[in-house]
Structures are given as C-alpha cells and as structure tokens.
Image 1 (tube, one colour):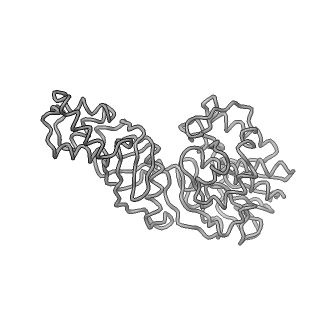
Image 2 (cartoon, one colour):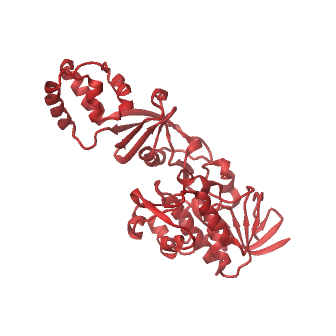
Image 3 (cartoon, helix red, strand yellow):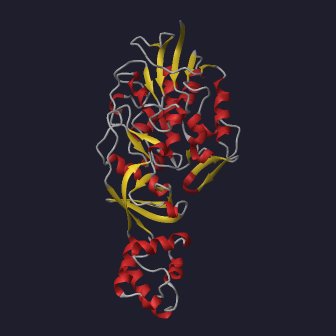
Length: 396
C-alpha cells in the first residue's frame, strides 16, 4: 500500500490549488481524480473563457459573500495578486471587475495550473469510494492528511456527485441548486434567444439588475442566475433527500430608469403628438425590437394599433407591464446550475486552516463547503483561496 503525507481528493480548481500549495513545502502529495483528466469544470467556466476571479478590492470583494467572515483569512492568505502571478499569461479586466485570460481560453488557465503540479503524483480514473478512520482510501493507499475538494452537485458530467458528501461523517447543511436558469410556466419558445438588456428582476424584496435571456424552457442570463439563489434558499428542500417544488413569481422592470407615473405622463404627451405611429414602432424607445410583439400580445394590445386609438385603460396596462412583467416559476434548470448552495457546515471547519474541528488532519476546500457567491469570478475565487489555504495548512 502506497503512503503519502497528503492526499487531495478532487482535481478541480480547489483540489489542484491545494495540491500545488501542499507540494511547495516538500510534502509527498497525491492528487486523486475520478476523470481521465483534470479541471473539466474549470474548462467550461466563463463560457469557456474562464472568469478566473473578480478584481474588486479585497474588502469590497468579501462583502459580496454571505459567508465573508469564514472566507476572510483565506482571501488574505492567497490574494488575487498571488493567483494571477502564478501564470505566465496576460489578463484583462472586464465589466464588474471580472478577470479573464487575454487569450480567452480557459485551457490556458488549466495548463498554467497543471504545470505547477510537477512535484505531485496524480492518479486519474480514481474514484474515491471509501475513507477509513485511519485515512486509508479505497483500501489502496494511505495518507497522513486528506483534503476533500470534490465540488458540489452541479455539472455531474464533470465528475461532481452527491455521493461525494458521504465520504466523511462531517455534518452538512441542506444541499441546493445555485446560480441556476429558471423554468417558467409560460411557453417562451417563440422568443427564445431574445435578450433584455440592463433590466431589474425582482423576487419578493430582492432585486437584481442585469441582462435577461429567454430560452426555450424559461429564463437565464446574469440577472436571473443571481436571483435564483434567493429563490432556492427560500424553499425548504435538500438534494440529499428530495428535489425542490417551486411555486414562485418573479417580475421584470423593463424600464428601470422611469417610474410608472413618468411613463404615463410620457404616454399622454407622445400619444397626442405621434398619434399615427403604431404602438409596435413606438415601443422601440423602451424595448428590444424582437421582444415587442410578444410583449404586446401579453398585454392584449394589437401591435398595429395607432397611438391615438389606445385608450386610458390600455395605457395603464402598458405602463404596468413595462414596470412589472411577471412570470410564474415552476423549476430550476438543474442541468445548467452553476454552483451548489450548502455543503460541509462551516461551524465545524477552522477558517484559518480549513481543517475539520471534528476530525483532525481532515481538510476541506472549494464548493464542497457551504460557501458560494454570485456570478462574476466570485466562486472560482473561493476555490483558489480555500484550496491554497487547505494545502498550505496541511503541509505545515
């Protein structure tokens, strides 16, 4: 039976970074990956471009996360500057401080990381099925310390599996879908591919500004993806036991710059001065052209009606729908959920080392922990910083 100082379970971004950090201190490290290659999920992040991190100042960055107190030490231990300096690459910063490799290739990030694994043994096609109390894995190898970086439940084709949570007896919070497109009750296939730009999406008291994209089965885009966490966290379910049942309504403010009263005032003036203009042409001032006819059909207004022929009741209906265009939500598009909400309970993990408070020499990193953020490089930031801290702590 082979023996190692440290075994890292999971070859995603958190696991790779943990192995890199652990091997820097001359520890004998093995990285166990169930797939035939490393970093499958990393390759598809950011639409294949890899939004590697978010470049906000660190204090602003931490304020984005619900679990900021837990993440603080790892973020200061392994900063964005530390991360980017690992690579012999140029990076660009785009809207909302999102950082990408200038090449636009996530494969360049993966290659840069794997190049740093030269002192690490890698076992491919190695699915960890059991870990004994004395850290014997699959009855094949033994380690003094173990780092669990198996990810969550999203993108199972990349190797993530709900079975991974049973590898240890560590207490878990409820496991849920995060950053997921939403399935609607209405059939949206007629406007699939249409994008609404810079709108405000609301669910109960939560509001998110961003783009919304219509798909054949529902809604997606940054505005929807980020709001989905609020919906998911508000439902009582646990993927270890059951799938969610959703009965929710969201609303889209299609004209966030104008109040309802301002819209009505503008209608009153424009409908008089531009009376012969058809409503479908007039609404180009407010809406994406390819969305107008669908919008008018939902409002019950003929698209070719002239403005002068639109009565007061219809004006009110237009203003109401422009400010609150609602959809009934019936599910999460779980195959496209980007992160997992929930995981290893943070109350039982030391934030200064990532070591379990219940099982000595057992560490956790990345999405397997009950930590998550919105889209925009925030979740890879978690993976890299907690992975580095776990590897560094285990090697010490």
